[in-house]
Length: 410
Image (tube, rainbow, N blue to C red):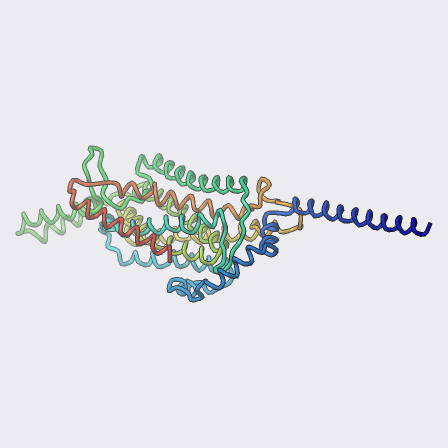
């Protein structure tokens, strides 16, 4: 009897242990299925021995010294808060380019900006393909570490959709402006363009044509220089052309464009400080020729230099507004708001780990793609009758574009 009781007790203990094991396994299985993408990646980071060995190897072989560009970024953006750094970046891209307008003559030739525009295109596209796209789909990985990334098909679709929406938004804005202005639009054209008859005409020829005619008239009438000059001055004052509608619409478009720049800066700094710094550099390189080109368009639209400079400063406030909107979206609807219940699964957009703040960066990447391709490259494809001059100009433009992209690799 005693032996049978011992056997029954042992069988009961084994059965109880088996039930506990099955219950724990079932609980673990449910917990894994309920984990969010971020929680799974964190567990892999902590428990996977292969990732830990790769992290140790990478950390041991990663140089600790900073590059000159990284040192400059650390000085320009000293704050740990992404909100403060994005506001600093907005001041950098809005202040200096607008102050440079005071040094620009009113008869500036926009075609002289072609090399600078090509440099800016290289910077924008380099930032998109070298930094923004990897950050959008894979995320930022600190130097010296290795991270496992879980692929979410629906998440990738939403990110691609946000990029496309940003691109199409600028297409719609540009198309609407062209319709409103009768075909002129808010283009990034800083070079020569063709008239209705197909002849090539430059902006400089348009802005300085009156001055050249005045000079020829003075040469033919050397004996009456003073009287001719006074008469021309009076006629110019009496026949001052009205400000074109396209000039005012250009201000609206520039204000909207600067809002997207502010959104780009805020979303990139919330992604990482390095992404934010490189995006600031790309936007800054683009803003200089963009602001000078818009300044020339306003002068040609009938505005005085003082009025054109004042309105350009007003449009710069669009970048500040965009940055504030981006900070608000990131703080109120960022990924941090989804970190509520552990084991509740993905609670973001369409059942993914994305929040509204996460779609700002791909949206601005789409706008950068439009500005760097559709907005500028058609101008670079225009050619004149002088083949050797065009070959030389094309070579310089491609070198400038490569230099702009090369800086983004630093």
